Image 1: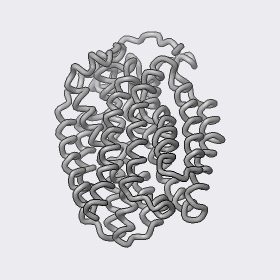
Image 2 (image 1 turned 90 degrees about the horizontal axis):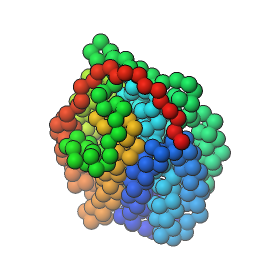
Image 3 (image 1 turned 135 degrees about the vertical axis):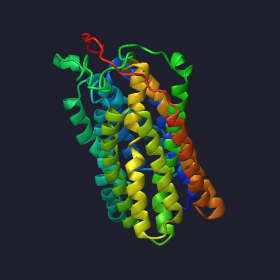
Image 4 (image 1 turned 90 degrees about the vertical axis):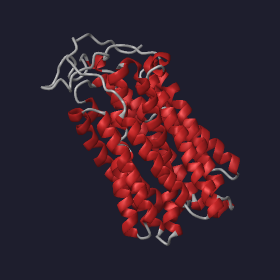
Length: 389
């Protein structure tokens, strides 16, 4: 944010709007990519999306006007990311796992967090030494030269492609919790799902998730530098958030498989609220790192229980489009939160009001998650799975 402001003289609301457009485009892509994944399989959708991401990042490195940031980053790059994130990957994992599904999804989410831990400090170091243009160019090249080939070589759409069935299909644990739900093999249309209360409670929670975490991610470094903390220290804190996010995600996976999905999900939103409460009083590096640790534990931890609940309640065959629609609410929340943070700061010179509102929203999401009714789990008869067309 600040390198763009320094180079072009834009205000924080204008730069925040680029992230809002990104979030909305990303959100619109979620149900679209979900439908494409359900029809064509995750590998094709993810691979093409990664190519678009790389090209979008490289195009962003050449911008000179505000509308170009909105177009190349806010729209084009977001379209690529929108097809290659947790909706597509969660749908992929749901095809491979019945038993330990929560843990499997959490490990994938932990990969996103581990990337943040490693790449964010490197990115900040590159921006400070090489400039933001060269950094975007290098990031785009990395996607095209490394991430795309790895995906094409290693990703498989379903166990049927290697002559197998999903892990744990037809089994149940001692309590029956690890087995398939009665809805495992069913298909639920979007209209049917939207007529149920769990769909809207999950969507509300994900809206708050996007509202809070994107506000935190986008404005944490500017907030830290405003109170006199060094840019590199602030970037390291954001990276530390990614590291603890990986821990939180994996712990959440175990919790979901052992104690169900909704209660761990509610606890995660409560923890998110506590991180925002700490941030309101943070005035030193110690406070910033504490926010990073507590916030990190809740950062990606919402993904495993939300994804698993969608599969449990509505069936994994419909997971792409339904999780995509629920994720759209996440990105609408992201767009709202990040832009509101910039607008209110420009108006008041402080982040107190937006961070306070984010705390209250997290408490609402906590209550909404607790109200979700989970289906009972029992063993399902094994059926032969077919590969996607």
